[in-house]
Each structure stands twice: as C-alpha cells, then as structure tokens.
Image (cartoon, rainbow, N blue to C red; front, side, top):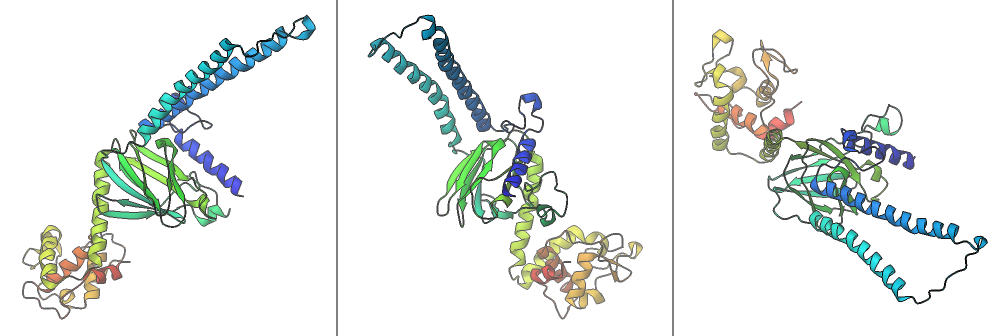
Amino acid sequence: MVSKRRILRWSALTAMGASGAASAGFSDWYFQAPVTPIARDIVTLHDLIFWICVAIFIGVFGTMFYSLFKHRKSVGHEAVQFHENTTVEVIWTIIPFLILALMAWPATKTILAAHDTAAPDMTIKVTGYQWKWNYDYVQEGFGYYSTLKTSLDEIQGRAPKGEHYLLEVDNPLVVPVGAKVRVLVTAADVIHSWWVPAFGVKQDAIPGFVRDAWFRADKEGIYRGQCAELCGKEHGFMPVVVEVKSKDDYAKWLAEQKQKAGGAAEANKTWDLAALVAHGQKVFDANCAACHQANGTGNAAIGAPALVNDKVVLGPEQHQIDVVLNGQTNGVVQHAPTGGKMPSWAQLSDADIASVITYTRNSWGNKAEQNVVQPAAVKAERK
C-alpha cells in the first residue's frame, strides 16, 4: 500500500514538474523542469557528470573488451610484463585527478551558490510538524498552517483519486515571481525535510536547529514537493505546495493576508468605547453613509431607514450584528447574502463591524442599553 502511494506521488510530481517541459527536453522519467537558477545549475551539473561517467565507462570497458578480443591467447599473443612502469603509473594517476578536478569545480560552484542566502528579498520561516507545515512571513508579521487537502475518501479508496492525489494542500506557500526567497527551516517534533524539486531546494528540518536555503522562481505557476524525510506513520501525507504569483497578484494576496491577520488580532483584544467609536466612524463614512447619510437620517428614496432612534440600533446587539453580517429585506434577515435592500457586510473584519455598530449606538443622540460591541461578539455570530 505504501509503495503504491509513493509511486502515485512520484508520478504526480514528475507530471506536474514537466508541465510545458516537453519542448525543453524534460519528461516524466527525468528531473522536474527547473524554474530557478539553482535548479538549472543542478540539472546542468548532473548532465555534465553523467556524460563524463559515460565517457569513462566507454573508455575503460571499450579498452578492456578490445584487449580481450585482439590480444587473446588463442591467436598467439602473450602477456607483456610492465610491472612498476613509471609512465603507466603517472598516466593513470594524472588522468583521474584531472577528471575529478573537472567534476569538482562546477560541483563546488553549485553547492556554494545553493547556500548563498545573502541579500534576500523576503524571508519565510518553515516549520515542520507531524504532519503539516507552518509558514511564517517574518517581515510581514503573519503566518499559517499548510495541511493535506486530499479527502479521506480518496485515500481509503471510496472515491476516485484526483489529479493531485496526496499533493494538494489547503494553504500553499505563496511567493512573488523573480524574488529571492530565503527559507529558514526547522521542526517542532521530529526530523522533516522541505523539498521542492523544481526549485532545486531540499533542506532538512531538524528540531532545535534552524537551517536556511533559498530560491528565486522565474516562472509563475504551482510547484509541488513533499517531506523527503521519514517522519512517522503519516509521512506520505505531508506535501509541499508553492504558488508563484505575479508581483501584482502577490501584492493583492499579501494585503488580504495582512487584513485577515489584523482582523484576527483585533478580534482577540478588548476595545474601549472611544476607540470603537473613532474607528467606527471611519468605517461608517466609507461604507454606510452613502445610504444612511452621514447624520444617520437615512434615505427614504432608496429604502434606507434612519438610524436615529432605530429599533435595530437600540435593540439587542446580537440582532444588529446579524443584520450587518447577513443583510436585511423588509425586516427579515437574509442569511444568504443575495439581493435585499440591506446588503451583507460580512466581508468587513470583526473589528470593523463591531466598531461601526458601536458607533451607531452612540451617535446622533442614540443611547443603546448595550452600547459597546466587541469584535469577539461579531466573531461568535458569523455563520
């Protein structure tokens, strides 16, 4: 069972890595198509040493078989004695030395380049767990877990296996194209290994140690790898997925992640009334004033009620939170945010919704009994 899964994973890896690589000479039995300078150097180094080995093989065995055939005893040849022949000794010492030097120079150059993590454009800390990865964007101040997305039904054979069986995650690592990314790799429990073949990166994650590596992807796309260290019984369910986006798309993604991270942090703290009202006014002016008016008097022409002395605003906080989150039509809360005069504002953060509700409950003469709504209350009401 394990060997079958490994075969499936390798087939998926090679197929994914070779996407669009047929014209570049890559196939599913060779390396994944390289998309970083280091990966290309590794492939070039492999090819150089491979053909040197082929030449040595042909030279050594060709000479041996030629000698066996042409100088065999049956045609009258006798063995020639050249024991301790200085010339021969020098030749078969110098030639291997030159061959090793020819191989060592590009190998050393590639190894040094693979470990040159100086001057990165961004740094990401990668932590291995049994059995998932955690990615911390060190300079941006947020992080998240990346776990296997393949369903249990697929794994246990109750459903057809998808295209990326055991090589799909809920939250891939996202990086911009053309950026030098330094990864700090460690582990929280046992030894793991973070491996993305198309990047030429394979770095062991060792508890108590921080190792680093780097890559610079020059092509957008999704690249797949996996933990390459036997880390326990679920080792085969610990894939690595990296999504390389354009710089503009990455900037949008980064802004979304920061908003989520900020919203999560704000949802866990207790705000005072003044801070909620001040922030709520900004949210109201940007999102609500167009319909309800800046002074809260509403607009009958479009069916936007006045918020001054409004029963929803002055009523239980749970109901107003529900209205803002899900929208409302003719006094009925719409749990499916489609249509209706009052749209859903679920896209706002918990802190934004809590503050704008608090603002309406403490403005234009309104004095609600529950006049302070905390982000935690909004978080609890989300459907």
